[in-house]
Amino acid sequence: MSAIYSAFPTPPWLTTLILFAIAVLLLYMARTSAHGAINSIFRMLHNGLRIGARSVALAEKRLSVRNRDVLLALGRDHAERELNREFFRINRFVERDLGGYPQVQRAIQAQVAQISEDYKASAEVPPPSPDWVQAVESVAKLQVKEKSNSNLTSRILEDIYNAAEDQHRETLKEYREAMTERNNRLRQMAPFWRKLSNTVDQVGKHLQELVTRSNNIDRQMEHFEEINRGTDKAARRLKASNSIQFCVALLFVLFAAGGAFFNFHLIALPMSEMVGAASRVGGVKVADVAALVIIFLEITMGMFLLECLGWTRLFPIIGAMDDKSRVRIAIACGTFLLVLAGVEAGLAFMRDQIAADYSALRASLAGAGSAPEEEAVNAWIPRVTGMFLGFTVPLALTLVAIPLEYLINTGRNIFGMLLEYLLRLLAILLRLAGNVSRHLGHLTLYLYDMLIVLPLWLEGLWLASRRASSGAGGAEFGGPDGNADGGSSFYRGNEVSKNA
Image (cartoon, rainbow, N blue to C red; front, top):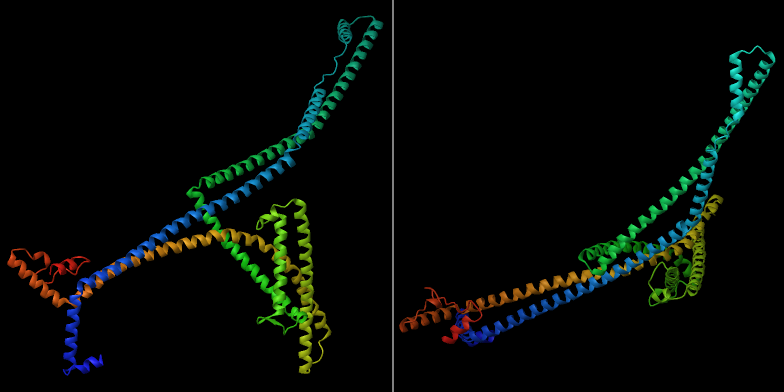
């Protein structure tokens, strides 16, 4: 630019004006090609962004379908496990509680038979008195009423009457004893009635529990059928359930990570004394690597132990083994885990001993005396606590396999949903960028025409005069100000330029 300005002897403002006029003239002359280039560039950008948005939207739809299939498959597997557990429980309930129903039935029949026998025995009526007793009683009463003068006959009849009275009293006594025996039998029937009532109530409770379990199985079967049909209700329920399970599992895994961090610092110091504190591998202490290896081995043994016990299903090959092989592996993993826990307990004791030695060394260097006997006795408290923690923390870390399994199973759906939302947002942004590019193309054309507004205005005046002279109406090309409508779209400006 300095060379151009030095080539012209005119003042700089005049040179600038001349250069601007030349540039405007060149832009006007290249207006058609410039419009075409601008249209092509922004149309290509607009179409590319729209194609990208459409592709991302299709990918989002396919991912949504895939996430739904995975979600339903996971829910179906979980529902099958729940149904299998419920069927196992109801089978065990039937075998344990209702399997002895024939014995209960025989006991009930025996009790009913005993009650029936006691009832029949209590219902027996004592035998009536002989007929001659009534006849003698009638004769005796008759003779007494007639007041016979014969003393001998009178005494005989009185004796007969007294004998009849004595026999009558004996009969009443026997009858009362029989009634007492019947009452005793009825009183003895009460425990059998209560036992029979308790047995029937117990059978009723078992049947009610069986009905409750059957209703629970019916609800789970309905949920399982909804999952098989792939309804939106089942998908929403599974999505909410997976989100909650993912958060809970992530929380427990974080707790386990905190426990592993504590366990690492519990055994890092004694490991440095065993393998050397100055040894390093890639800038990392060998003692730290050894402590991490021990912790990872404990977690691995715990995962294999829970897998063999059937609590988790991270490794299908272990679940496909026979029972003997899984029991052997479980025993081996449990033994190795106990050994590692004992090693950590020893390392924890060693850590406390090392810390005590360091404290004694610092005290001796500072010139302090030896610790009192009470402090020496109290020093066993942190040692025992450290040993206890060194033994129990590894065993507790083995249970991390359960939340880890839930985290892996639900994390696939959670990350799939997040990726689906990201693809949806990306598609919206691409559509928005495509629309922006289209309007930016219009804006670029308007700005281009604003730079050459003077030639366009002169062109409009010339076209208006020609069409006025030839009898053609020029109102469609512009208003009284002469500003033609040629630069307001992608194509009209090109047609006006061609007509010009």
